[in-house]
Amino acid sequence: MRENTHVVQSTEDHHHQRHQNPITSLNSKLAKTWVTTKVFIFVLFIIFLSASVSWMYTFVLGENRFQVTSLFTRNTNRTPTTTTTKTITDIPKIIIKIPLNCTARNITTTQTCPSNYPTKFEPAISSSETCPDYFRWIHRDLKVWQKTGITRETLEKARPNAHFRVVIKSGRLYVHQYEKAFQTRDVFTIWGILQLLRMYPGQIPDLELLFLCHDRPAIWKRDFKKKSKDRWPPPPLFHYCGHRDAYDIVFPDWSFWGWPELNIKEWNKLSVALKEGNKRVKWEDRDPYAYWKGNPHVSPIRGDLMRWNFSDKYDPMVRLYVQDWRSEIEAGFRGSNLEDQCTHRYKIYIEGNAWSVSEKYILSCDSMTLLVKPEYYDFFIRSMVPMKHFWPIRPNNKCGDLKFAVEWGNNNTEKAQIIGRQGSEYMMKNLEMKYVYDYMLYVLQGYGKLMKLDVTVPENATEVCSETMACPITDGGLIRQCMDDSLVMSPSVKAACDLPPPYRDYELKKLLKKQVSAERKVEKWTDEYWNLRGPK
Ligand SMILES: *[C@@H]1O[C@H](CO)[C@@H](O)[C@H](O)[C@H]1NC(C)=O
Ligand SMILES: *[C@@H]1O[C@H](CO)[C@@H](O)[C@H](O)[C@H]1NC(C)=O
Ligand SMILES: *[C@@H]1O[C@H](CO)[C@@H](O)[C@H](O)[C@H]1NC(C)=O
Ligand SMILES: *[C@@H]1O[C@H](CO)[C@@H](O)[C@H](O)[C@H]1NC(C)=O
Ligand SMILES: *[C@@H]1O[C@H](CO)[C@@H](O)[C@H](O)[C@H]1NC(C)=O
Image (tube, rainbow, N blue to C red; front, side):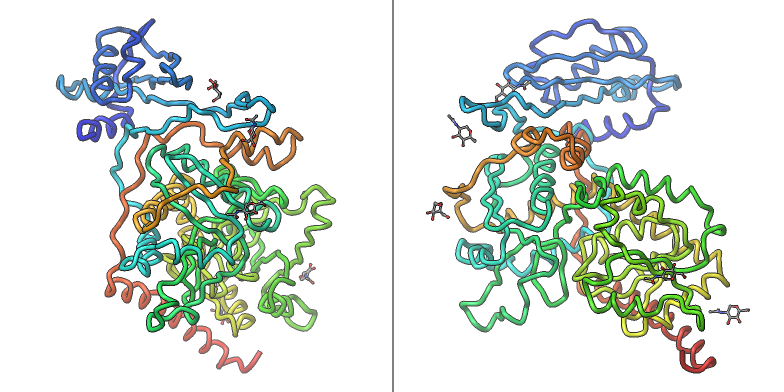
């Protein structure tokens, strides 16, 4: 892989690429051993010898009937370079395609998993970048099992809280479902892990994990103390959000692969739409109020928020709307397109029952986010900084804080725009789907290392793959649509980003201090403002 390192960097640098040559056939030896680096270089060599513009070929790989497509980017700039650079500039991007194989069926015509999934794939482009900072929390989430590892006994204690068990063995995935989750949370969570397996074949170790699909974490620290031997270590349970008082392992939620019940597209597509949506109304032309739309009935804090909506006597500078999903569904979701909601200068994020899926959509809009300090965190929020990425709002002083924030923003439009933009850039850059998969990869690799048990496929578990999930769904509905949209078609040619080291204690203190001091500053401004004005 060493050689590939610099090879690959130059692939992306189109200016250094040169004219390509035509090749009409490729010898079959090459086809069989194409994976090895040697062949890789051999390919380069051949390409170099021949002469043409741009081409594409497809062939069948020995026993593995996957299409291998090699695409050559057309190069326009001819830069004088040394011979060595020549060899490393013309790199084909070899892409294995793994389309859904819906023809894999057994005698009873039940959809089965194809036997020829690639089991290993060496990314051609090794990583040259460090993952975003939020990856540093992975170590912390897994730390509690570092000394003891995870034994069968420890794992099984999480079983009563789990909706399903996932077993990954030799790159194949088995599920034992205990309880149906709300809507398709479980379906798309499993789908997501399957896409990870397609993305990084051979890189996910054998493991068994238990997953909780409810809103709130379940493994509370108060119930598991080091002192009592039979309650230590705590059971490992995967979940969508964490809490400072809980041990749940934080994992991306289902909505990254879609939330068909609410017509929410998978994240790849949606983030592009949100980016476009940001351009629709210029910041200055947006309504100079704080906008929120959601279901106020899921938590008291949201109910409380609704009390501060506009009244004739007094304008608290917020515009709050109740999302009535039932009528939205009837109306075909015309009023709830997320990409159309970036029309106010400020947007409010407030937790629901626990963390809310809406967080990433709200922060993606480049209006300044007024973030009511959450109790629960998802995997990416922990490294975000108040006043850099969002404006902090105290949960017990929402009304005054919100009104002040909006007034401040309208007085300091430049600064408010910057905070809005930085928040949305954080989402667009650090939360690209590739990073979401990389995060999952490192969580599962770290977790796999802790396994002190024989990974076994339980008797009632069934093998699950993208085919068994997607192929039987032929109703033309949104579930299949979300699956098709988020299907990982090829193993990643680019390796995962480099996992940054864990936060050291002093670094963590520094980060928390930074966050707290930004909050304090805002509180001070706010309180000073209101003290002058008397209570409201
Ligand atoms: C066909 O596959 C399904 C699912 O994997 C399995 O339950 C069934 O027993 C298989 N039938 C035969 C005849 O192999
Ligand atoms: C689909 O899967 C079946 C069963 O594993 C396999 O025989 C067949 O070659 C696969 N088809 C393609 C196009 O990969
Ligand atoms: C909040 O106020 C706006 C007008 O300022 C109104 O359109 C909206 O319906 C109100 N929301 C609720 C939930 O009453
Ligand atoms: C905004 O500016 C107005 C007019 O200068 C001033 O009265 C008000 O206090 C300012 N509000 C904030 C929150 O800065
Ligand atoms: C598997 O299912 C059977 C029949 O439903 C049940 O009796 C058995 O206990 C189950 N085994 C496990 C390990 O859950």
